[in-house]
Length: 385
Image (tube, rainbow, N blue to C red; front, side, top):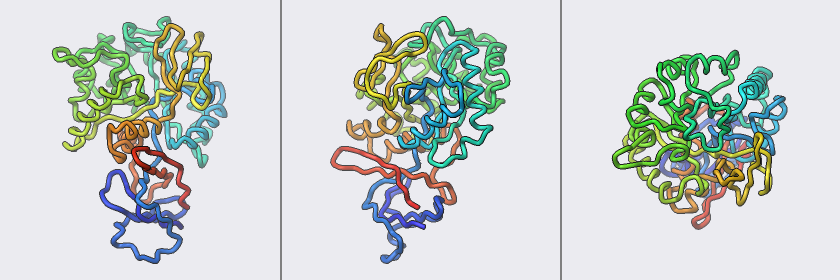
């Protein structure tokens, strides 16, 4: 048993005492109700505590790109590494590739869950794959290989998923590319979350997709038109929808700090209104996550990583090598949001986006401790029990 004193929680005002027994959260009490001589107590001196991060868009780590998966052990190594990076759960993201390659990776992810790898302690949970493609608008393909981008239709989606549908958690697609309007309802009927991205959808097309059941948007501002006063587009539709979750890369390169500030200000208004959607952080990290800067293979091409930012040889931005919680630290260090807000963007909100529980009594308490010194935020895994 462990007693944690003087704890701040992102969703609760004031200081609290947490009781953790056999890695489960047994009680949360205001500090005013805690005996001064609590045994086995650890004073956190006002530091913040949360569950670990949930990364819903991560393309690889330690030199492995998830479309290259061939064995569940590879995914196990990544899950262990991500745990050490403060991540509780993630969706291995498969970008546009040869369909056979995508299905091979889905088979590995399916086997990973079936063989009980998700039950290992100190490993981030694999929630299922995030298919970021191939059903994208080729005009907004970004770094995705154009030769494998496919038109959007129910037949093509069903053919790609085959018998691996239960290994898929999220599908990113461009809704304006479909004529029959069958895909989103079918995916939702199979408990697959639909995210809109790599898209030129106008506001009407986006709103129709949300009405059909799409609940997310993939990496705000990237691979979509920006906000325009007469053409609000996909992002404008998402930011004014009370039930839509919007992913955001906070590395300072994918979206400049001024626009990050604007998005966060909009998001605060939504949060105060009590809506269930909102911004959440993603890493968009590539295979060199955990490795030094340098040049690395990326499908049949190469990417160059400079100060954590990855680009193709033609300069196209392709991702980062920063872990998820670095984005939360950035937002605080840049003075763009409060500590509790930044923590929630990396932990609570992505949980809500995929239906995972927030920190609550009886829940497994894989905790992260956040410390503020001056204007700088840092974190560490908290071994509370």
